[in-house]
Image 1 (cartoon, rainbow, N blue to C red):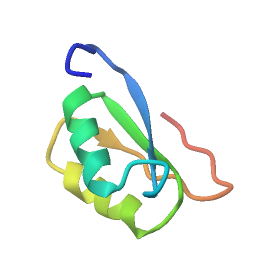
Image 2: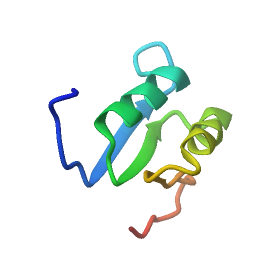
Image 3: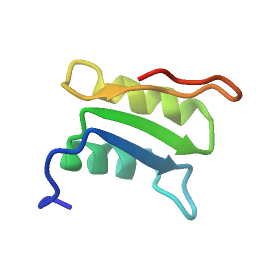
Length: 72
């Protein structure tokens, strides 16, 4: 993944078991360094914690709400 460059948008599957847990998602996101990241799969408090970890960096994080569109 470190060889991947210039990612505009990344969808990061989170939730544990068959997807990444919050720590794996944070590490992966920081490694691939996209301009924008959207956590997907299991909506829970981890999504907000994930977004908080990215505050202050150059990565914009959009946390989806069920049934609501996201404008990028």
